[in-house]
Image 1 (cartoon, one colour):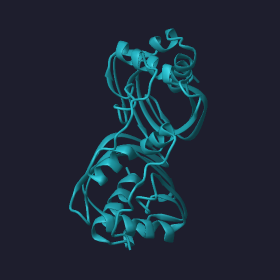
Image 2 (cartoon, rainbow over the protein chains, first blue to last red):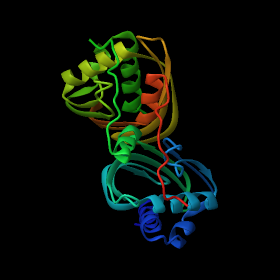
Image 3 (tube, rainbow over the protein chains, first blue to last red):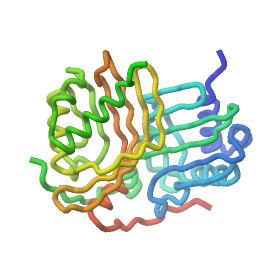
Length: 146
Length: 146
């Protein structure tokens, strides 16, 4: 059985983010890759939508300048022939402060000919923002639950 | 072909949240259902982990008191025999303020004998918090991206 494209892509992404080696990742991105990581781009300019291989490689380069991935814990995984959906807890270190940050994220990927054609990542962004700030944001409790 | 359990569950969830009819939903929950919606529970006490049918029904009742679902737009879908992973944009109205709120969420579900055994939902929570507050939260731009 051939290895699922998810695993090759995961290794290449980690290598690009942590070691700034982009060749393996570039090989695994479709030229027209449709990419979006949802989140507050004011704080994290490397989030948001990107179109095409060059734009995605540049976003990954910026992510690698911001964080180092220490550990990925896969909590949920679903694979089919051309796609993958997974929920992971990603333990990182912020490059500028050496602060540990742990984010839970959901990844949806579609592959075409073994290359990534579409990616969507959703993050528990409020938690990520609070960890990055290093302090809680005060929230009112919204009403009407009883 | 039998209908996938996801569709029955989706209808029953919507009926429970919008119309406060819980019978169909109760039928589709495993007695020991393992349930978690990640997010700031200080602001949204109906988020968080729940174990077992009664606890989940109570959380859904509280969600129905807080919001009404206007529209669900499925952006990504993956199904297998006993599971589903999907990313949806959910357009809601807050019950207390009549304010429209749109949240993007990722759902991972596992079924056992047609009933929901495990659910994980991840939300773009920062966006949700800002919409619920009705104002942006000022964020610093974190450094070191160039």
